[in-house]
Image: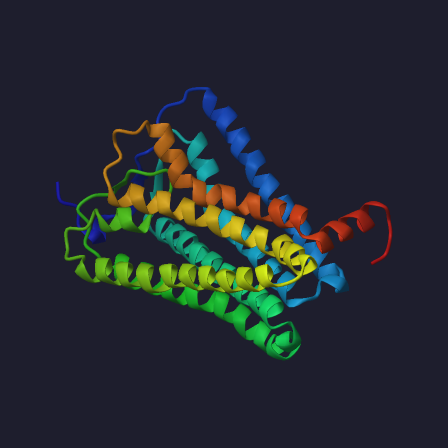
Length: 311
């Protein structure tokens, strides 16, 4: 039966399956995981905001990154927890589009933040004498505004102007959360504009940012290898978390893109669910742990807090 877009008031998330009493165990595990993400990110945000020694560009961008992890997690986990306990896996159309907007804008903010952080490290290591004049407070404010405003605006346009206006022939999304591409695949109206805009956005913005990040780190490595041992150690200690974070998030997004564009029905259902959730669940917990353990200044503040010393 053809379902017109005006009649689609809800979507059914078709990737869920009956787990019996195990759903309570899955719910407890997911809730604990979400709680860990909130605690880890809030702790680092408070540490950075409360300690003046961390009021430097790199740590301010890190603070923005941790806020984004909370934003993205909140876009996923509350609905995920409700669906785990529910016997009927439906979600209203308005809430579904809101989740798509939150998750996609989270991804854009993540990539932009990592790109700005790589630019900050490039200036600090390759142009140390000009760093303070180039990375001023006004520039930090402008870059932080860019990090947040552009992804929010572009994804509002994609979701509410392009996707929400489509006529749909069905309402079953074969995932555990709402996904823009899966909604587009339900359309019986022309989706050329959606597909072209999506591909152009992905190749120009996402891949463009990745190339920019890789370029900056190539320049950083060049300076490191020609510099002293101390310079190399400092560069490695500050750049390793950034590169690890970028690699982890890029791999997660790659899994998601491949799964959406190609038929992976031959894979076990639980593996497909894990691959689709990886970019949204692992990054928000890995980042605070990675930066908290690797950044020497943050470790020092932790020790001072634990032993009651003032910074």
